[in-house]
Length: 338
Image 1 (tube, rainbow, N blue to C red):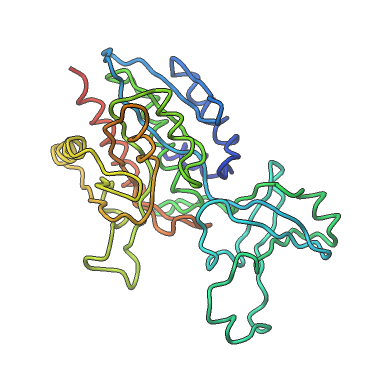
Image 2: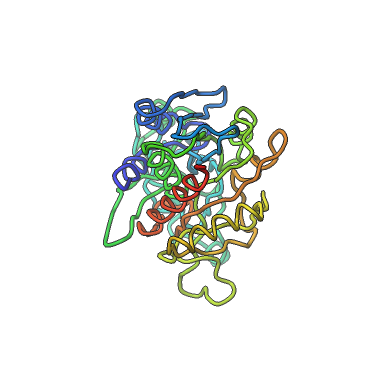
């Protein structure tokens, strides 16, 4: 699973442009699933038979997309102006390496040098319109030949595994995909649906369509929670910590967990000796809300890996948490075999 996670993190798939990850997931799923379908929005919907047939198979849901950029135009000197795709904090962007399009044209995000700024500029968060991407072009024509307006981009960088941690861009989505693919490779105890969804970072557009097509009655939504085990954040204000186990989300901005399903996962974790954490602050949304509201409704609970520095060029997660998230999801599927 860790090698799968590393491969997924090396791919680029901002919201609306998920083809690199979708092609990888399709290739991995085709050899072990019974049905693999791509819907009109780009979701990959996968079904695999288990040892036991169940009338209403559960859904394991994970999103493929990441935050990114989209080129808008170039100025006369060849610097690209862009907009962010998804929620990116402009404070972390200057100086970060990026790449654009399927050719992965390299660049770096720039901002006016600090020694040329006024005091007021130094005391506020930079605006996106003040940022630019430097791809080494000398003119508007050269820049727009290399990166035409409308070309997507993502943060760039190596995947680093050190001690018990992994550092990379886009861990917030790829941890869920890696866990889901790992489960898919197993001999499953029960029939199970898997949905690898698109456009989560811009409003979970894909998850609603996938759930509408599958119409599950129970779903586990895999993803990431913002770890708060950093300097200056502690006590009751801390949401969760890396290395302390998967996060069972009671609520977020999009959904309230089904109480019975939350209790089932909690009891399974306790019975297996899996450390776990409670996520109970509505600081962000997830695919859980659209899945919960689709068609006749669905029992849902988000099962998240705690990740530091979400939506940045260098997120960090504990591999122990990823493994235990997979173990808890596996225990849940096993509990349905009757």
